[in-house]
Structure formats: structure tokens, C-alpha cells
Image 1 (cartoon, rainbow, N blue to C red):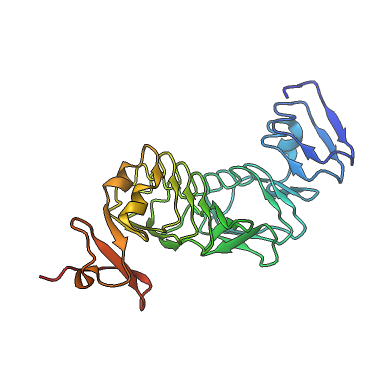
Image 2 (tube, rainbow, N blue to C red):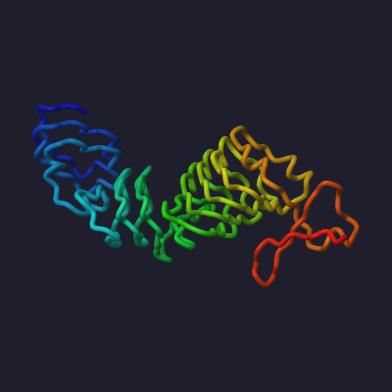
Length: 292
């Protein structure tokens, strides 16, 4: 870091990773020889070096690592990551606002932090079915191990149904997705992490499964348009959920509890509570209406 007098470096095959900012601001570094063993390159590892500045525009690959996209990206760019790539480095596509779609081959097993930060035009991730770590549904990127949401395209709009079996919604997964208006999550979801839906100003309704046990700090902060919560459990189950601070928009929304049968006709309704059920034809929540 900052070794401005360093002009050349040879990294042997025995090295498997290059850490964050390892050669950051080594402004005199002109020649870099990287051995075949390197499988990951950390955040800003070669930032502001003469070698990095001399790399060609476009997608830069180093061995099996997609290191960085350099230069100006044309509008509405679709990128197919080359087969054999194992790692997508941190910040690899950071700020690529013209990136609209990306295809991830089965060889990719690791995606660095904020690899797609600021990709405001990104609409979909496409993942090869053979990929052992990641999968995609409706363009949303999941980790296969627990089907946890890893990343949501920044340009996602409309309604999103969380993949069945998903156990958690990651920190900031939907943050700032202002075009999102409806989210449906199955009973398998157990936790909604910090800032998960932060500033989703267009979010109007959310369906939350009864399996949710924790809603973390500011998960729904800034969701000023949130009007309706369809909860698949009872009021007692809702009261048992640990809801941390910064979730007033969620708490203040009109809340409905699930009932497969009309609770007003069955005589099971509780005074002051409202109820909903699934419309089997449209597979959407439908409110039970109390008849006069």
C-alpha cells in the first residue's frame, strides 16, 4: 500500500489470493506478473497503479478472476461472464449504470462485496442451472445453500415473490428499489435483515410468512408508501416477532391476519382484527369483508 517506488512485482503460483488494497496507490507499479494460483483479488488491490491504468477497457480478467470493468460502458450493455471464471472481485462493476443484464456461468463460486454497487440500470441476473452456489428467480440472485437473497437488481420493478424455501432476506437486499410495489415471502423466511427494504418508497404491500422470527434494524425504514401488511399467522404470533427500531412504517401499516375460511361467517373473528386469504385463481391476497 502506497509503495510509490515499486515498479515491478512477480506473484508466484503458490499465492492463492491478493488482499484488499495490497498495492493501493503504488503509483510507479508498471509490471505485474500474477501466477496461475491466484483465485481472488481484494477490493482496490491495484487501485491507482500505473499497471492498472494501462489495462485495456472492458472486462478485465486475471486468471480465473473477473477483476474489473474499466472504461465507459455503452448504454444497455449485456455481459456474459466468460466460462471458467471462479471469482467476481469486489466492486468489479461498481458504478456501471448502463449495465442492464448479466449472465453468470456455472464456474462462478464467489462474488465480492458491492460487486454491482451503483448499477442502477441492472434488471436481471441470469445464472446457469449447473451453478453450485448461486441461482436466480425473476432476476433475483440467491445463494443455494439456504436460498437466502444475495442481491436484487437495482432496477427491479413491480412485484417480487421471494423464492419458496428462502430463509433470510439479506442486509440492504432491496434497499433503494423505488420501483418495487409488492413483495410476497413464504413461510420459510425466518429473518429480515438490517435495511432490507430501506427507502423502498414505492413499496405498497408486503406478505410476511408466519415463520419470520426477527425483523432487524430499519428493515422497512423509509418505506413511506407501505400501506398494507398481509401476515400469514395470528395476532399472537405477530406479537412474538422481534421487531427492532426504525420499522415504524411496517408497524403503522394496516395489518391483516390469515384465515383460510371467512372468520365472520365462522364466528372466529376477533374484535378489532382484520383478515385475508389467498385468492386461488390469482394467487394474490384477498381481504375478508365483514357483511352487514
